[in-house]
Length: 221
Image 1 (tube, helix red, strand yellow):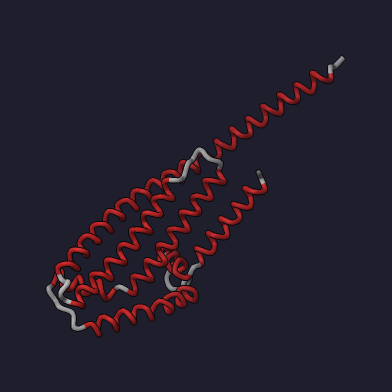
Image 2 (image 1 turned 45 degrees about the horizontal axis):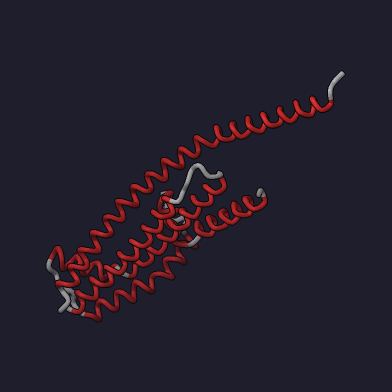
């Protein structure tokens, strides 16, 4: 005669083993994707570290340029504006590096995905505002390069001001063009992605995906 208590115990043990097998299989399925993500983040971290070192070198050079030409208003203003832009890019880069370092691949997959998506949002924001701000400071950078490498003096403060204002006026135009023609401007995936970043489409999609992950994690607590 079958012992009901023993049968229940056997079923409980089988359930436990089944759960362990399911978890093991899930880890085996997830592991290749996590390894790929880990390698991608390591490459991104290396790239960001090199980028950070480059920005620091440029900031030091621009600071020296501004100090040496403090007596010439146009040169000093150009050096300071370009330096401010580079410092802003350093801050963006440090934030991305900090986000990358916070990713722990032993955590649940939803937590890892949330951190990866948060890093993606930071990178999209850095790309967007880096390009748009770069449009504004192209004239100060041009003045610094012309003076530092070719010894060419700028014309006047008025010329600098007009060109900076022209760059500011181009920002809404660049955003509108990106939103309207971003996917049709070129067949290059990189350029299309850049246009979507400037238009804000990728940022919106990333934030929506992050919200859905957070909701999924809350529902499965």
